[in-house]
Image (cartoon, rainbow, N blue to C red; front, side):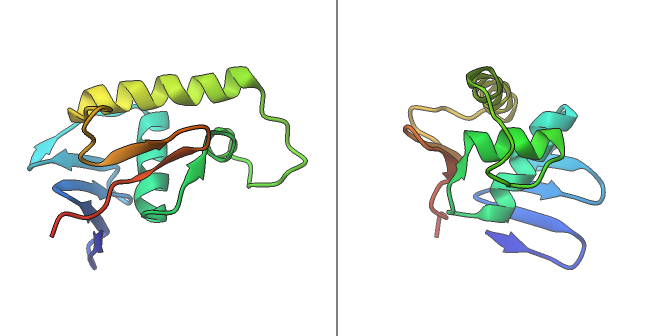
Length: 115
């Protein structure tokens, strides 16, 4: 993952600009919903650290990661749906991921960097 002075975060050809709210895959701009953008930004900022579905659900609600907040199975399923939509839009395959990998029973993280 690489970060630059203009606000771009890059990982294996996937680029995200937080201030401008832009995502590009191989220089093609990809339109995302607010939720999809926030999920992708959270993953890209976390790098290889796993983000749980509960953590991501709280993020979308605007709540910090605090164990006193309740996250239902429906909330977690909502994250799965958003991630599925995000993967389709960026051209990601869950079988052979280029950017986002699923950590079974836990959540999501970025794939290892291409060198």
